[in-house]
Amino acid sequence: MNDHATLWNRYQDHLIRCRDGQLDLWLDVSRMSFTLDWLAGMEPSCQRAYADLGKLEAGEKVNVDEGRMVGHYWLRDPDLAPSPELREEIIVGLEAAKAFAAKIHRGEVVPPKADRFRRLLCVGIGGSALGPQLVGDALASQPALETWFLDNTDPDGIDRVLRQIGAGGLAETLVVVTSKSGGTPETRNGMLEVRAAYEAAGLEFSAHAVAITGVGSQLDKVAVAEGWVERFQMADWVGGRTSVMSVVGLVPAALQGVDIDGFLAGARAMDQRTRRPETAANPAMMLALMWHHAGNGRGEKDMVVLPYKDRLVLFSKYLQQLVMESLGKEFELGNQKRVCQGLAVYGNKGSTDQHAYVQQLRDGVNNFFAVFLEVRQDRAGASLVVDEAAGATSGDYLQGFLRGTRAALHENGRQSMTLSVPVVDAFHLGALIALFERAVTFYASLVNINAYHQPGVEAGKKAAGVFLDLMSRVRGHLQGHPGASVSAEDCAAALGADPENVHHILVHLAANGGARMTSGDRPSADRFASAGS
Image 1: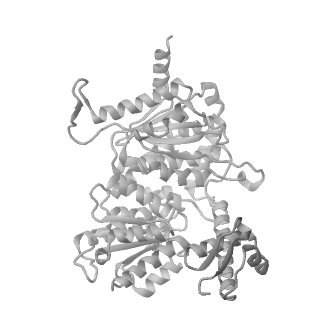
Image 2: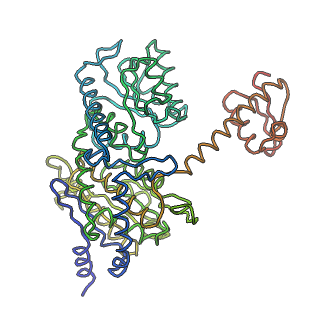
Image 3: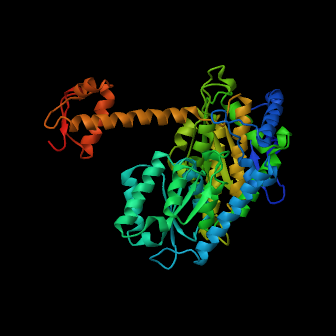
């Protein structure tokens, strides 16, 4: 049998076409190098993973660090919630998001110094920003509110966004601040910067502000005390990276005019499809198995996500958090064995990738597998013929580049999968997100780790807190010795601190008006003095 016939048969054997109602999502794993024997050998592990997922959805407290359930699946099907109270909480949150957005759109809730809200500024970080950004960029071509995001504590980035909105534009801008605890530094800093901008423009911030937070959090208390426009309750059983279908994602989406009912329906349809324990027909399990096979169950190869659609350009960025925060774990379940698991994710969009890094994917180090994302409909309506000789449209070229890149990778022993949806709409974006969420859960079970805690993130936050405390002490040391010129080693010795950290702090202070610096021939020779001396 020739190679074309072999590949054709493998394609037919390993193409999963989900055609459950509106779902219509295809997963082609034929260009992955697994064998049927390997697949059969994984079946006992797959069956354990189905059972583990069943426990998760039933309300088992798998977030062991915080003693919490993980229930993002209930968000798109409240009837699955393990108690009537949780079911009611989900329904109330959804209806509140839709009702509030409708009031804003109808002009029933208005700012004090403008006739209506026409702009939206979302302040958050991580899952509180990545999901809403993806959904807005993919689905809100002509958003009901022109939208910006503050998702970092970079002062220049904050200034850039505020300049784009403009001091005059703040009067008609609604600000949504999202933080479960209310104490997340990046979000708190962004809120304070935005508040200052409103005050400088002679505007009352509270009359433009909406809080999405935990009940009784620091942010919640501020919103209550100041009488913010609205407050939405974040559930403690929804983690940031899986929060896009909670009020965290639904409030910004509804305000932008996204069909959030369709979004949830797509995820619900994918959940239903992937509860079936028939592995060869389960796209989430097959996706997880391909990750396992490509990386030898150790994440030895990166996942390169290549969406051939501009609307999905942020999908790889979204998946970086979902996959890497979930699967990047030092220890296996029970903390008995150090395994250092993970799966690195990066990506670009097609056919930009053709002019960026396909050269390395095709001919360089073979340390990856690719996931192509195909959207079968080029555009709504007829397309211009851009190549008269071939009768080809721009969309024909895009399909050619996708298939050409896939073939070129295969010819040189590079593995790939292809996910295909008919269109980018709310339903199918919801289905795609749910597909990867469930693949993450399955993969974690296959490699015996906990996908739903993140001790490494907390370690980084604690280390940042220690550094910031040292910065305060260094600043105080300089101010307490006006006129003195000190080295990093001098300052570190006085404070009992690491001289390298002190040097970084002193350079930072000098770059931002908090100190004066005289450079030496090496860091230990640099001298610093209080800015006022």
